[in-house]
Length: 296
Ligand code: GDP
Ligand code: K
Ligand code: MG
Image (cartoon, rainbow, N blue to C red; front, side, top):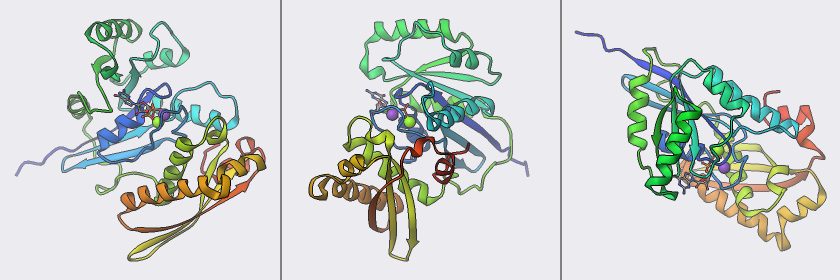
């Protein structure tokens, strides 16, 4: 009997905000692990999505986009993007047809210094034509000469299969890092807060989504249904009023749509209670950031 080799490794997805990192992660994992909206800073934490086969375990990680920190929350977001450079076996550097190619920032400089293989994925090629794509490939080849370039559309799935096959070929021999039935390193409660945050990003304007955090106070799982009590934290009374909306309509919409997504995610009936609470300046308070799960 021949012993089969096992391959395993960390595949880290990095890049600027809104290029489609979370959309790609969900495609690669085949599950809706990361929330996606058209707003920058949708992803606040590093999230793992794990794909298992008999002889392979691929540990993808989605990161917040790289950004220049304005407040403490953004500092921790930037650090989680930078830490993703350090522990990768394979790096997926995602860009898109919207991003400028005439820049040369610190982050790009850091990516150039990386030892592991880098796949440079030019996303959203559905938004361009052949000439535009050729130009982008040339520009990116100059910026990151060592990277292998693959044009994709994460939204439609175009060329995602070849990316998977490239990853599988590059994956090092290693025993698995996680249990072979694991899908993610995050607990169920995390997905509750993420689903609610996605609705807030979708339904509210301007600074509201960025001034908001969600905390799960109760998560009681029964045989048929899960009872969830969650708090939406904002910084000011005026924001609380906006979240609740006229006659409670806005909050109701968040609750209804979030509950529907949770029922799909957990495959159980969900009973969801939502409350709104003011915590002045939470984005700069260490104790609150820690309580909300950020590593300081
Ligand atoms: P992230 O901030 O890098 O994680 O980006 P998201 O995955 O949240 O996506 C940002 C926006 O780009 C969302 O509105 C996506 O629907 C959109 N998007 C992602 N991939 C594609 C694509 O291949 N084509 C187009 N046209 N839009 C995309
Ligand atoms: K986004
Ligand atoms: Mg994201």
